[in-house]
Length: 141
Image (tube, rainbow, N blue to C red; front, top):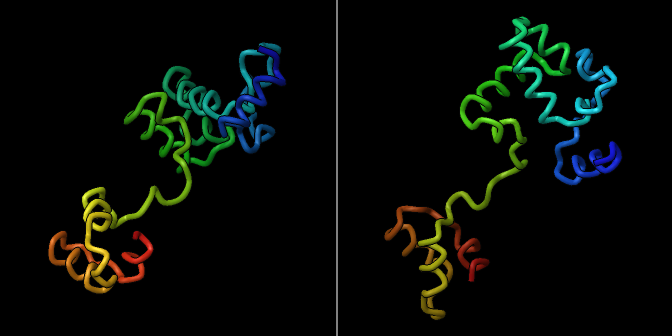
């Protein structure tokens, strides 16, 4: 894989490091094409490895790899919890409607068309213990 195609793949997968110039670690400034400062996951992994195997202090490892000390600890916790998947960034934003469970969606879709949004919201409150605005219920329909 060429360097350019690797960069394109990283960008497409949203794994491109936002500031590869901030990385001072010698690994990423060597002639070895394996180490690419633009590869965010690789940079995170090598930062953790530098601390665990090379014995670098947390603040020095974070500095060399372009992260803050608090970010280092977040990355380390995610890696310990999920392994390599923990090095991937979580998608930004909310993960969907907070109150609308599949059971509530099914209930709304199966409800009589004669019920008003306010009445259906009241039934949802009584049945599921979830308070929804009448307009939310009407938009669901």
